[in-house]
Image 1: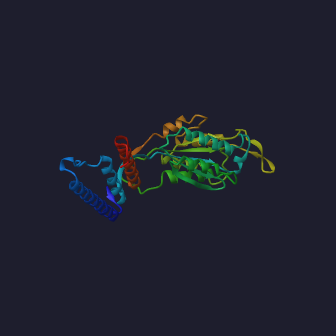
Image 2: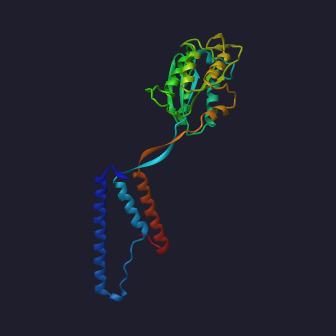
Length: 306
C-alpha cells in the first residue's frame, strides 16, 4: 500500500496525537481534582476506550493519506464484435417492423445469454464502415449504441468485416514463435446484399487467417421483397447464399434463433491482471461505521452516548 498524499497522513497523525495528549491531560487533571475531594480507595479505575473508538480514528487517519493498493484480478480477454448492416435495404419491412429493427432485437437477445465478462463491440456498415463502439463490458452503452443505428446508403459489407478484423486482431510485428490469441468472433446481422466496398469473400480470407469465425444471421425474405421505403416502393434483394459462403469460409456458422454455437466459440480466456485501487472512500466509510457501532455499544451497555 502506498500513500498518494503522505503529508495528509502526517498531518492526521499529528492531529490525532495532539488530540490524544489533550484527552490524557484533561483526564489527569480531573483525577487530581477527584483525589483532592475523595479517598483514593473510591477513585474510579482507569478503563481503556472500547475497541471501535480506537479503530475508527485509525481508519480515518489512513484515509487522510489517500492510500492506493495494487490488487490482482482475473480478466476475461474474449471478445466479440456485432457487425450490423445499416444500408438502405435494411429499411425493408419483410421483417417486422424492419430488417434493421429485427437485427437490433436479435443483438439484444444474443447479449442476454452472453457471459457478462466478454467484451462486445459494435461496427456498422452503410453507407460506410464505422466503429460505433469499441469492445466493452458496458452492456447499457452497447444497447444505447444499437438503438442509435439508422438505415441508409450502400452496403460495403467487406469494409465492415475488415474493420472488425482490425479491431479484434490488430496486425503486430511478426514473431519467431506463434503467440496464443484469446478467442474472438464476429456476429454479422445482414441481408447479405453487398453492393460496395469489395467482395466480402475476399475479406473472409483475411478473417480466416486471423482466426476470426463469422457467425451470420440472414435477414429478410430469401426471395427479396417489395417494400415501402420512404415515399416509394422498392424491390429489396437479399443474398443468404453469400452469407452462408462467408460463414463457411471463416469457420463460422449460420445461426437461427439459437446462439449456442457462438457462445461455445467465445469460451473464457482469463489472465491475471493488477489493478490499482484508491482505498480512501472505503476507509472513510469503515471509520464512520466503526464509530457508529462503538456508539451503539456504549448506548446499549451504559444507556448513554460516548
